[in-house]
Every structure is written in C-alpha cells, then in structure tokens.
Image (cartoon, rainbow, N blue to C red):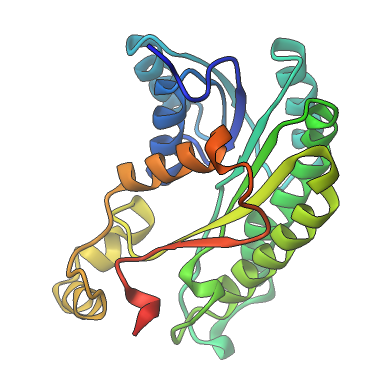
Length: 251
C-alpha cells in the first residue's frame, strides 16, 4: 500500500483530543511517525495506543507548550528519538469567551501564550530540523476568527489573526528550503472546546443557522485536509489559509 506520508515525522501539539487527535490518527494512517505533545499524559498515551493498534508509530511527549523550558526539553527528546522532523502542526489552543471589559490580563495572556507564543516556540525549535531536506510542512491551526469575528472573542480572534500573520511570514522565510507553511481555519467543529455551545439548545440552533451546510464539522474532515497539505501533492501551496467552515465565511 502506498502511504502519502511514509517515512515522515510529524510533531503535533494539542494532540490528546479534538482536532489534534484527529490529525494525529490521519497522518499516522498515511505512514507518518507521530510525536504527540500535550499536557495530558493519560490522554496522549491513549492516542498513542490507538495509533499503535492500527499499525502506526507514535510517541508521547508531555509538555506545556507555553513554557520555553518545556519546548526546549521536548525538542531534545523528540530529536533524540526522531532525528529528522518533517512536519509541525501547531494545534494547541484555548478560548476564553467574555466581553472585553470583563477580561483579566491573566486571561488575555493565557490565550496569547497558548495560541501564538507556543507556535513561535515550536517553530523556533523544529524548523532547524526541517532545513536541508527539500521538504517540510508547517500547519498552524488558525480559525475563521482570523477572518471574521463574534462578540466575546476579543482575545481569541486577536490571537488567531496574529497566527495567520506568523504563517505568512514563515512561508516567505522558508520557501527557499521547500518548507511550506499554511493555516487551517476551522469553522464550528464538534470538539471538546465547542461542547458547551453544542449542549446549549439556543446556542446550538444559532450556530447551525449560521452554517450554510447546516451541521457541525466532523473532526475527521480536518484530519484528511491535514494529510493533503502535508503530502507531496500540496507542495505548491504555501502562505495561505484553508477555510473549512461549511460556508460560514461565504455569507
């Protein structure tokens, strides 16, 4: 069987659940070795076991990706196990929903550190391992909130817009090395982060009414998009953002 990502190694943050787990499973199914990164050791171990049961390869690297010390540590640990890293997926993210006047500075910094600074730290650590291979992929999980917004998303929308700017710069800096950098902007997906909205009948109906396709996205759909963007077939796609939102931003 011809696997699209055979002999590739992918570092995926926020890999213990939701979209990160879906991308880890999808990339592993296409032959990639997966370095699973998250603070939740128990869930990471379960994801690694699921990948192994399907015949794939994965290893667990617990870390707080907002910590420079932790990121440097997993850089050493991952490169000791997998000397060549080809793919980096910055998926770890957090959202705090409240009006700007109610935000604390600590909440603001937590969103920025998780959604923006962590991606910078991971890129700084793993881009050197990609250089010189004639292939590399960076995927940053942006959001439709980097294109449009909603009330109560002051920190989240700001952070995701910043992440999109980072993606464009990475694409330009790394193009000579044939390393591409792209964003994936999910709309409403059925993840743990969105569970409070999905379980609130009023909020759920409001969101569904805003999605032309009339449903929440399936995490597996993100997984398959990530596989394509990491494949050789997507080598001419860089510096852009792929919206996968059921038509939300087309309105």
